[in-house]
Length: 404
Ligand SMILES: [Zn+2]
View: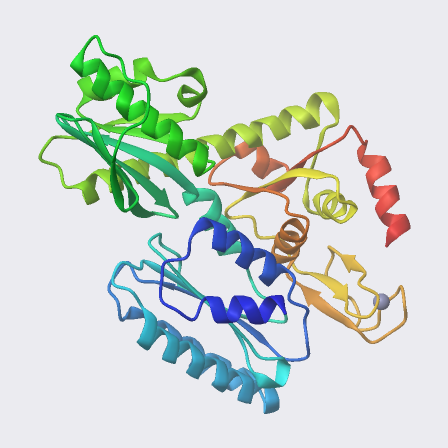
């Protein structure tokens, strides 16, 4: 089973990669609710490695007062699992942790992750996993290739969800490279005319190779401004299009500091990309009917399966709606009774609309852009989506009404 596989894979201690995170989000978005509570637990480790204990204990005190019977037994079991995992597996470089747990009564589930990127302190008890913070982390940190160019050598690193791994070293004197574990003579075409050019072209050849093999979409050049400028000028078009930024660094700078400087610039760049998409959404609304905005229209579009990209403000906080767990009817207004007006069953429960949108997007593998600030999107309700085809809003909601 998929869930069991995810469970065993992540028992070992390592920083979760972007590829793993995508799979985990997909697994979590597919978890069906049971009668038992599902616990989604996020910890920030930025202010020290032990602050999580206080966060967990404080939340546990409140939850123990609210939950009863099997739910309480499940909670205790989940709290023990969380504490055991944190004690045994936390890596020193971890800045954020996410653990998703359900106890035996509800169908046992445990999926822990740790990241070099930060997460907030936040613990939710809800029928299904709360995945918003994972989706936001994925959008903000993603991954990129970094060329750190120094006078006589260069290092190429992959920065994956904030964690840097060295992919290649390139030395100037002999133009020897180290890719992976083996040293080997470079096999790329070199420019014979000039030693400096050879070095620049050597770096670009390896960059190209790594960008292609890793299917990378973003590149940052860091180091001596003179050198990075040369590399930039020599970049072929397809790499130049993926270039995010030139980040200056001194010869004496520690590599970890250079990585942190590029990471900050990358997060800003991602926010700019998100704002550009929000702008496209507004234009789509105005001119071509290629977008919808507002909670209800966005929910309808996601259920209809016509969404290209979901765009959401990070402080989007809609009022709860409701879902009928029997016939799966979803409404964005507050529930008025526990009986479903569609099927007549006593199966209505409150619905976290933001999480419902996250689940629908993840189930259909629809990309999500989280925007920190966009006044126009805020005025439209804080959420919207770009559509794949020119369906009008009216057609979309009719079609959904027919399905629902
Ligand atoms: Zn119903």
